[in-house]
Structures are given as C-alpha cells and as structure tokens.
Image 1 (tube, rainbow, N blue to C red):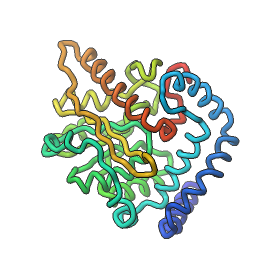
Image 2 (cartoon, rainbow, N blue to C red):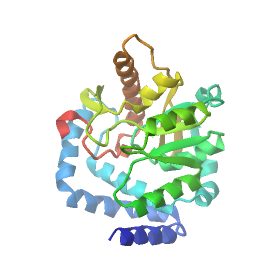
Image 3 (spheres, helix red, strand yellow):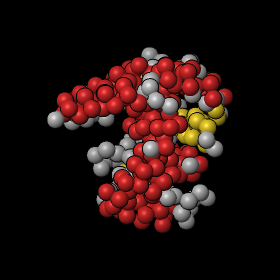
Length: 287
C-alpha cells in the first residue's frame, strides 16, 4: 500500500507539473469544499477557533477558505519543480524587508515559519537571494513518500535533515549553523503535543522550543518568515530578526524568545489568516 501511495503521488506530480498552475488552482475550490464536508468534525473545530480569532483579527478567519487554501498548497506542491518556479513565478515574487537579512546572511541564521502559505516555494526565492538553506523534515510512516519530499526540496535548493527520535537532530543543526547554513524551521505547533506553554492569539499553545534553543546555543538571530499570496502576488516576508536574551535561567530565556516569536507569527498570520492552514489543534483547549 505504501509503495502504491508513492507511485500515485509521483505520477500525479509528473502530470501536474506539465499543466498551467492557474488552471490547476481552480480545482482547489471544489476540493476544499468537499474536504470541509468529509472532515466535518475538524471543520467544526475550526469554526470554534474562528470565534476567537475573529475578535482579534482585522481580516476574518473562514474555515472553508482555510480548507480551500490547504488544497491550494498541495496543488502547488504537486506542480512545483525548480524549472517551473524559476520560469513562471520567480520574477514576479515580491520580497518584503530583504534589508533585514543583508547584514546577517553572511553568517548562519534561523528562519522560523508558521504553517502559512507555501513554504516550499520560499526555497528557490531564498536561493535567489543567496541563502544557503537547510530544513528539518518531519518523519513519515511512508519512507517512499518521505524520500520523494526530500528529493523535491533538495532539488529546489534546500538541504534536508530527517528529524525524529534518535536522529541527534539538534546537534546536527548546531554544526550546520556553525558552518554558515540558514536553517528553516516550521515553528508554531508541536507534532507530538509537547512544547513550551506560549500565549498565541490570546490562548495557550505548546510551541516547539527548537528554534529558540538553537538561537540561544549559537547566539544567532531568529528571522520570522512567511511566503504568502497577497493581492494575487506571491510574497516572501521577513520580520525583524531578533536575538534570544540570555538570562541566568535558561528556561526564562526560552520563554522570552518564544513570546517574541509568537508575537511575530501573529503579525504574519494576520496578513492573510485564511492561508494559515494549521488545521490540527494549536491551542491546548483544542485537543
């Protein structure tokens, strides 16, 4: 079954990469609507989330649009190749606050991203502005599919480390940062329901401490980052880099670093909240 899943994804990618992306993205609307219906329990939980977010955000959070944008993410991934992106998208990408990273990109840095927009598409843009990228991939049960994703991201221009238990991931990333790599980490939710309690959109979340712990260990900056589609244009946004304060108590340093990161993520997500397709529980009261 796992081999069949891999063959299906690979063949679908080989077909979709030859089709006009704008045409393919039209399919996201029926797919997103159908997905909203067949995952009705999850959709209802997102409507509960919307009641909280819509008291805070200027743009309304709509769970149906979130599911549609989640479908768009997968369509873009299955269309995406380095050649496709460079020929058809790269020249029209808007980069916001590139000056923030000009002074730091000669050394290592930690780019922390929320699950918003399409982070895969940020890879060739990062290469274009001379970032030497590395990312950590979540382990999957299907090793064939995991290898496919790894090859796709590496072809786009990002070295991949596979995370998970027993992989010594933290020390590997430290070494890569010391070598001048620019490490990209998706950072606003924990995959195993553990993390450091952090206020996020006025609710308690468990944030993974990885980006902040790495910054504390290396004294390198964290750059909150997102790749969004704003007014129909793909946009790479860098928020102001920050250093994690060094207190006598390490846990206090990590908490303060996560507090700063959460605020930066709130700002990025607020730009296009319906492109924030974290449909899994994000707050402790959602589990």
